[in-house]
Length: 347
Image (tube, rainbow, N blue to C red; front, side, top):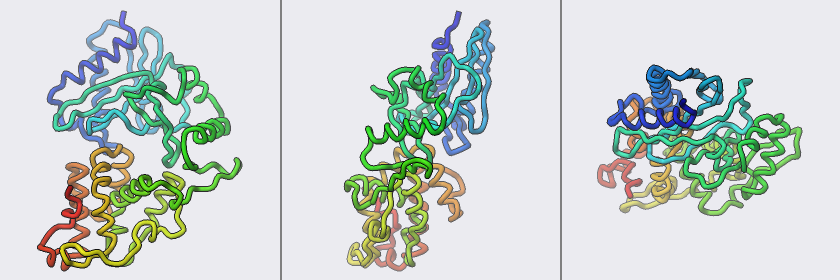
């Protein structure tokens, strides 16, 4: 008789046997998630091949978990996550997200990671709670999923389920205690009916965190910041407040002190010096961004209407940067030697 581990192993084996796998299942862009399309198809194959009492129920939209597996009268949850760069970590689900009314024996995570330079997906699975390596603070506090994690936010499955059954007020208290014990500074907005917590000033942060923040906003909002006109910092500032609960009394000074920068004896705005200085960090983001960050970036870039078909995050960002360079600094780039702005990002 099959058990749940047997079923999950069938998922793993069947997906890993698809080599090469169709590119439609490798897409990972917001709602267009190839892995989430693939798994229900594999589930149909598994059901056809077994004589066990086995049923799969796929949930669409904002539902946790993504799939129910009913095996010999017992119900298990299956949450689907994937990365397309070979890594095994990503943002998980909201701390405040409640499980449906169904009773689960256990909730598992099935994680697909595309091998770099190959049309092939590797699979890992585990009880969901064991992969919750940390809590990250984005628009809402979310679990950080790491399939290679040695430790979890929780010490046991029962502790995880206890949190899921808490009221929202009790979850706020849990989260505040977790952040106090595991983070420096405060990175999450606490509702007004609880004790007031102030945001963290950017000036108080270590230099490596400042660098990371600058690189992120240069990737997300280059059209606002890299310009021959007056830069617009409103969306960038809103992003760091909402995602990190950081603030600055002078965001322009935080990002770029102004003035000119000479590159091959041609004067360019100081913002371009910032772009060039952060190229290592920018490349790290382009190579390792999670799906939420990718979705936010493509949404921001879409207003420029120049990305007609998604290729790779890095090459699409280069297209955006080169378009901005031609739009704002065509004469300067010509004087340098007819270069494209993306040359400033070359490692």
